[in-house]
Amino acid sequence: MKKITKVLTLLLFVASMVSMTACKKADKDLILGSWKCSKATITEFGISAPYPPAVGLVWEFKSDGTLIADLVPELDIDNTTANYVISGTQLRVSYIDLEGDMEVEYFTISELTNSKLTLVEVEDEFDDDYLTIEFVRLQ
Image (cartoon, rainbow, N blue to C red; front, top):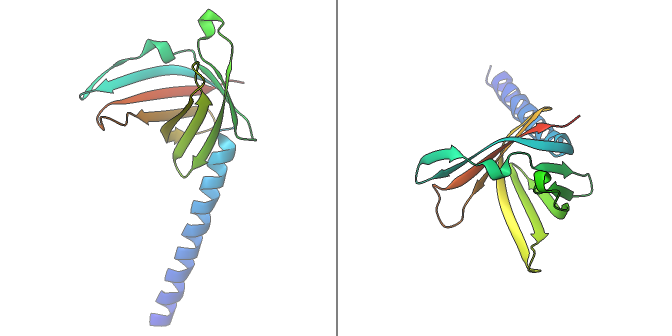
């Protein structure tokens, strides 16, 4: 009986490791494509409020680690090219700002499905201040 229990435990462990590895790979592939921000909220000092400047953003994730961001679609400002890396549930985005300096932003991927992507950016200075951005996949 002990031998059967040990074998079943080992099988469950292996199955869970395989499924976790498959999920991480699927997430990286699932993010590929174009996403449009449908809703954004900023939370400061525990109070949430809409964040209209992010609504309408379009981000296109490419398989080579390039992110094309249409920053202000309603003003027809040129696209910005950035690089991204996904590690577990963390999304790291790096880009050159208007002054020529390298900027890096970190997001937690809180939801990623075929049709929805939700990112949470935590501000470094204050752990309770964060921006939540919800995207829908563009067809």
